[in-house]
Length: 187
Image 1: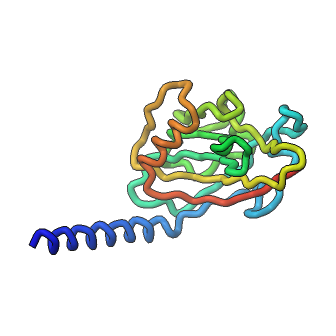
Image 2: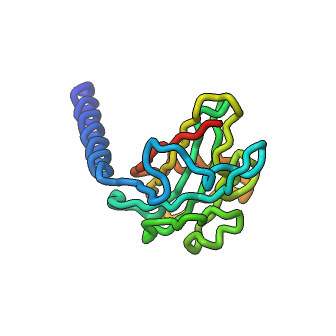
Image 3: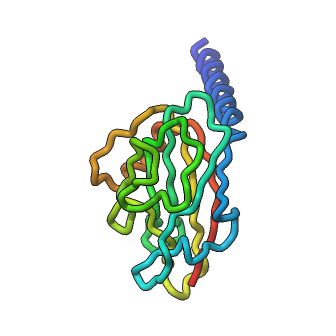
């Protein structure tokens, strides 16, 4: 009897989980600045660490957020960075649920072009704001994963100097959907 009840709970949880995935299936992220699988341009390359780019965050637009979305977070992550843990290039969160796009250049350190209430976390460059691509010379092109996360909370509460890993933990704990695309860059 207990096993039958546990089996029914497992089936219900699985079906609920599949429903949540199906609900988020239409959630998409696009950019007028970057096409999926394309090479990043000088505009999205970091200016420092031996790189000479413009360090401008791309325009991002999303559609089809899952029901129940109360806020968004945007992340840019390089899983190929030779750190053992990848590299966080941008972490923006507490983006109001009414937002469906960020303009090119919104990721400046002062965040003035971001929607009111948006917070930018500290990246692996050590400061808030968008930090462009800058892989080591001679490495194969790195992948840069641009993601918008739909969250079930209107605010993520973390200390002002929280690491990208802590913000990422809170994003994952509150995520109900996500949409991503990947671009590449090497030098």
